[in-house]
Length: 346
Image (cartoon, one colour):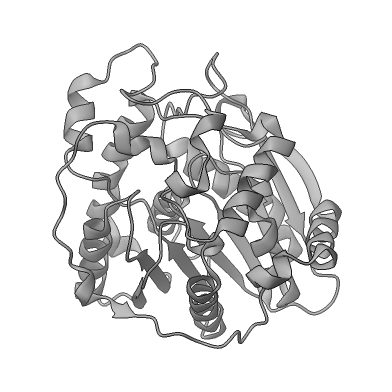
């Protein structure tokens, strides 16, 4: 999700309920994932780029005949399973090169799509920078089509979901509607709620005309300074993310519209009203220094899931911001370690 959302309206600071989450401890690099030192090595970066280029890319028609872009990285030999990545708002597959590389090197086939309205998928507004969705359910329907037509035919022994931010809202809804599709799921900073009182205010401000929410604009290059970002504490990973979009300008996306925010807020109610339908074991990570989504919603979701005896784990990632998979080494390694160990249980 974009940092612009913070300027929507002034909001009240929430008291923290993070203490109810387990805290991750500093761990060794068990799965030999990429480190910031390796990202400074041109040879390692070249390996990442070469793998990404080898991925199979294509499009399929999603709901309402919108072209949805995807990439597939299929293991050629024995694999541990397949991972379907559901990314956050504004994001594209190009942002996930390092993570795709690390997961692939650990024996997983990777499937990723650019959600409608962002990345290299079709936009639904005249202004391609607008963050817009006409029906939140279309996100889930697109993901289901991708699953049914691209993952299932490959007969993977196991299939896992990995979802971040907005992709988490999509992913949780998917688990509620299709509880038997994944062996396990992992959620990084899932968008299960926004800061108070954003949803209440937008409900009053949204109209029929598609327009940027107050404070939101088209993609602004001048807003990409590392020192001002609220996404990650890793300068090299942040720089790589910005450079990826500079190299693929079509994938850039600007601020959210009133419509996107309102449809997301409506979806939160649906998510919490259907938690009992989830059968898939899941692990959820919440960032200590979160400024994008509501950590209180994470706590509420996990508490309700545990009341319903769902198989789940929840962790607070110390000294981390929203983007756990492009965070500093310590936080990123902790998150990936716990994710892959969780997958191995199922």
